[in-house]
Image (cartoon, rainbow, N blue to C red; front, side):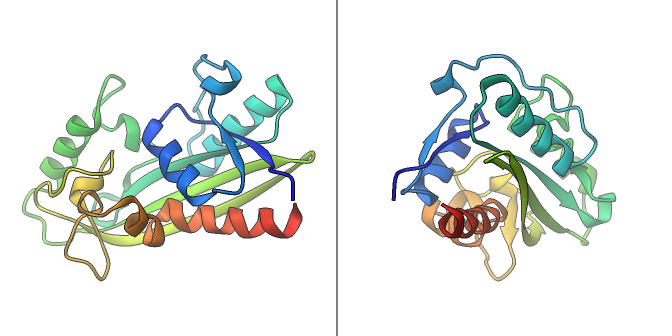
Length: 194
């Protein structure tokens, strides 16, 4: 089988590394690889909407097969905040540390810490669009644990584990994570249709 070339519409090196490890038989290229350095708008109010916006932007502007994801952390007791605003939770200029601090402060001593990560992938290939979703349920820890991963990984512990995502290897995390589940659906689809 010829190696399918797919653009992954992200500038996030961590995400790129995670996804490349999960798709060894597909030539995954980044936005930098296609010389796309502009800011792709993420103005939708849903994860699905943002994933579609990003994939469509690349396909329309560059004419390439592409997939894009949007991921949100949804905390049950905070009405599913931060959700679609996960990356900018503490403001436009925020970073992972500020986002985590805001979330931990908002939760405070609340014992109800159920949460889930949700990823939606939009794939544009052969003039068609396909959507895949992955969910990982867990809870928000009371403090950061671990040094791996990115984003909210140090304060999220998946169901069935005492460790945080940030204490797991890439392989361990990929096997159970929201992105891992969505990517597995994408991989299954690509294998069947390529």
